[in-house]
Length: 343
Image 1: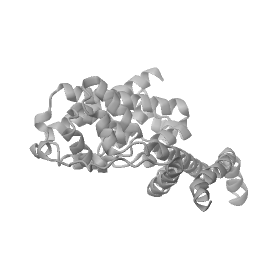
Image 2: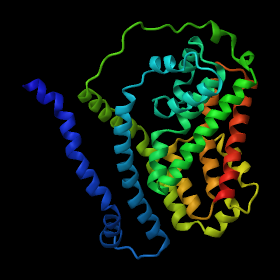
Image 3: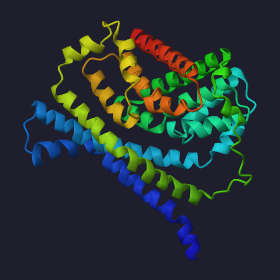
Image 4: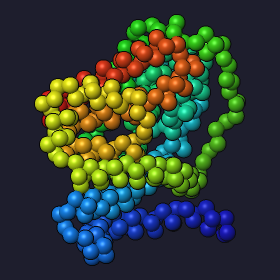
């Protein structure tokens, strides 16, 4: 009996927390207005007031969305392991493999820190180089944090646009790299490495255990990104309250033809994750930046991060790294110009 109580405890807690989550999320705006107007006694319309109102509303909204979605994705991720991912991609060729690798990159819990062991594992399993790159592009660029933040700040249409264009970049960039036959620019020791297989069968998890791991994912991921979220929204709040719309429109608006390549060039050496950059992108758009330019900037920051390039240098030679950055960067710029044209 005690075992059954323990088994269903996490399931019952999750059911109890869902309506509480909904009530808080549904009433965030009036709560933020009450806090700023009544508790702080600030005057509506002033720069500082609106900056603080932006932070008080956006920070808890983003954290609530992150908590819920990371919990759900944490459960989904229990069905994926590095070994299962390698097996899924093993033997896949050209375009089909690029599509599958990019899709798996969205739901698998890997980031730039996992680049080298994943690269070694894929090479050992016979996964083509272009397919491997499709996975390495999609995994950091299209993640649950980016999707949640974009949905919370822009709505489902922009979030869907980001996912769709990110997938297109990962698929096509990996396909192009595969066509170029650049295996000679992989460090020779990579093909000689044998990371081995544990040989152990994967553990069969009960649903209750998967829910428990979902809570664990919330604790781990939210614990890592909440400060980035706070800093990103803090910067966004300052821009929301003080940056003139005319200035941002002239710098990153549709009329500035150079804005997209400039944004990509600026974004590549910067290091941030989605939690830190999306709130800033939100304010850039609010202040007059075009959607395509803002998305291109965001993609370059989180999809072509400098730390990942440094990590990959241990397994790739510089010509392949430059080709990777160039192909993905061109894809990002094309997407930026396309959406500036459409929107």
